[in-house]
Length: 353
Ligand code: NAD
Image (cartoon, rainbow, N blue to C red; front, side):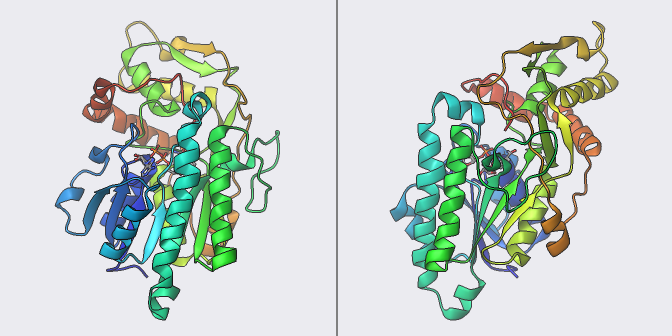
């Protein structure tokens, strides 16, 4: 449906956005404009070879700046917008929520306004083809008990400044559809992992510390449960929703991979031990439990059956295969993450996305 037309990917230098850009360049004929402010979380090296691709353009741009966005819409005449630009790290939102309110709420609002203005000026044919896909998180639903799953109709109950800002943005997107008819869709996904994941998040953090033989911190008792989604599976799901999703709908994306944080950390230890055994002994001995994060949600689990049933999506990776690929990627691509560590960033404790 978007073959040969232009897609705006905001946040395309981030973890998931870069996977989306790589996927679109590799598996479609669409032209991609990556719009990214390049915060600490961005890395253009996560889209190797893109600059040489005639179907790719990069624009260093903040989504809170209306006038500049307007020029980009005029210049590129996109057929779709995928909004992945966000402040995304829960721990950072606890320490400094201001940026989260700006980018996640004001930025989404500004992007919606400029998309609406542009969309209204399109010919009827192009107007009916246009889509605005907003990417969000399962954290907007709050925390689950032992049982049950988040579905598309679960009520919102965000607990952190991050999830509250994402919840606000989801509501804005819905309202722009209901009030102004802008053809929007929303996806809410579980915790992503995979290649090019920023080193402060749980899985890369543990891999990098484990390789160095350093202590492996785990929040609380390690029994918090997350539902893990391999980032390449997510990128395919987003493309599918963009192409075939129904206007005004929400789709949950999850890999059916519920694991405790302790299980995740122990699995990484075992995989690293197999690839590169330590003379000092198995890496599980490096695990140490640290004070829990305030307001730490106990369990997230996504019911992705709507996306599977209506659009035929299936995750290619289960947790073990995806984690093995990820550990191998970090093992083989030290340059990528070492450069980020050398560049220095305000290091946080451990991230859980
Ligand atoms: P990320 O932090 O890795 O990347 C975000 C990107 O957005 C960065 O490249 C950054 O430079 C850019 N950005 C930030 N503020 C901007 C602004 N004002 N203008 C333009 N660009 C800006 O995030 P991610 O993990 O790739 O997440 C992408 C989206 O997916 C986010 O909306 C996030 O809430 C959602 N999400 C992520 C996860 C996950 O596990 N990573 C899970 C659920 C939902």
